[in-house]
Length: 221
Image 1: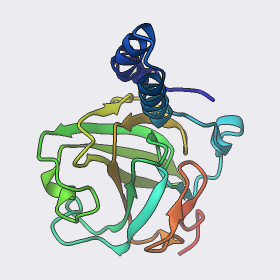
Image 2: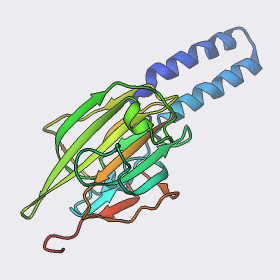
Image 3: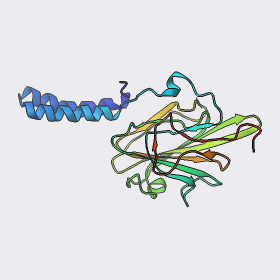
Image 4: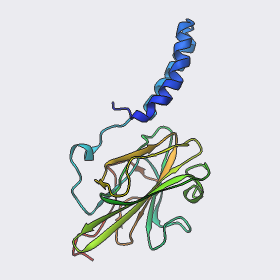
């Protein structure tokens, strides 16, 4: 299985005491520390998903940007969404979830901003506005319309680092890898009112596979 390069310093940090225990001939300690090293490394696992093999060409489809539990799907929460009218889908990532992040919608990246903040539990609504986060804006021209999707990488109590590997001017595909967050986090996706939501609160999402919603096809109302 592919392991994201961001794992290297964390794996090295946990592997060192494992090696010391092995040299000291302490098998039980070596086993315990070895399992910890393996667990930390697997946190950065990066499995292939459908878009990796077959790029998503459907301009109407919006996919989940991350694995996790959908904690909100519906009208945007008060004081959370950007200015304007939006629908909101929020996904909470536990320690056991894959933490690779993907673009929920393809297009041109027109904005990437980073906001320092606190480290509240990511499942709390307040984390969306008070925690450290990165906000990404993607635009796509379909017919005569410009479609805009905004999404945020939000750290949690344990996640203290956001990795965003795209910048303004980049072209991204729907479901394409764009970064990750380390050790528990949340992702919010803000969609225009015209999008027909297919996600539901309480359900599980698989990054790059679960359909969150669909834009009306060009010409539809």
